[in-house]
Image 1 (cartoon, rainbow, N blue to C red):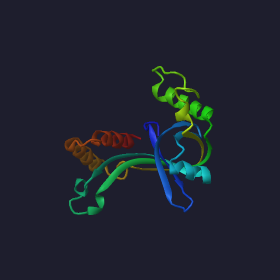
Image 2: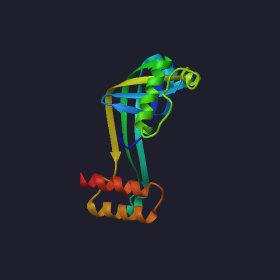
Image 3: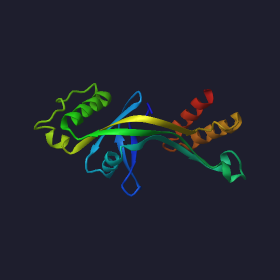
Image 4: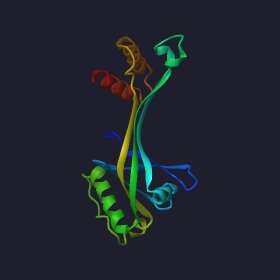
Length: 184
């Protein structure tokens, strides 16, 4: 989660169908904070139920089966890392709460820059009244990853060589994550 700057907030609407939004976030301990537009269906679902899920994931690379076995198609795979947080949320549409959340987000992502402080007024006021903030308490965590941890060292080396040679966007990061997992 430390390597991600956005995640997916998921909440069920009144009919039980999932709504999802991709949002920047801050995490401090067992709390995750996001802001979103009040008109977002995900906000309405979260506000109505007070519960949802927050997913941070990293899709790394797909590798064909023949990297591991010429005949066994079951070795085709997607390499990824993901963590899903079950959350309970408190939401606010108060401009002062939204402004404070935006200030925290700016400090975290742009702390080296300068800006006029976010506050209700001529510069930010209209936008603050269209936004909402959600403070989410983590109630449970489910982590999943697939980074060749179940491969033998020779299979892993073939996989790493394949990723280096193929050179698609994401292959270098996939190789880095696979190497790191093997060293743990």
